[in-house]
Image (cartoon, rainbow, N blue to C red):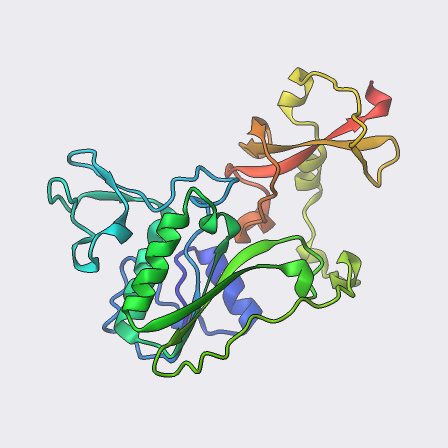
Length: 289
């Protein structure tokens, strides 16, 4: 079984893993952990947007709608988390990344033998390390040993520079203390090796969508033309260089600032980019200088 409330993500998950949609328990915040069948292994991770350097970095902070008090739910006993420690109200606004508290709720009830938790590298950075340590401490209090490490996909056969924190969580009564993360492997594949040669026409964007994607954003004319710096990287297109990374929204037409990280595509993006924030790259074209 799995847990996903976004219908496009759920459809993608079922298609990729060959899973029956009926096994989806839906929104984890509304799912009753006592009614879900027992399981021995638990995989997952809470949304990363509020931990990622590409997001708003709101962390797991919850805010009381009644008195405005903001607090970290992991600092409260799990039985008291949904109540504001200041006024006792249960009217709480929660960040997406605080779903790790829901993840803990299921693990606490089901006591699986093993679990794996994954999130962005920034969760163990200076800003969020206290929250991560509270997360690990709670797992230990539930009777688990936690082994964690930052791993990069490019060190394990995937041609992508993608650093993530992985927590391997083993119930103490089953742990022999011998677990070690695997050593890096030589990278033998590049991106072209991962792409399919023959792709069904239905998976291609329509001509209209392609035209939207390649059209210069409306903000482009307002950007000052910059001379290429020594470190600018030339692209595969003759006469163009990567100038800088940017954050875009409103179907790529609104400039929201600079970025040094790239967001991944969403499951719904096969319909074309929506209004969600995404990242892109400004190209400097010498023919337009």
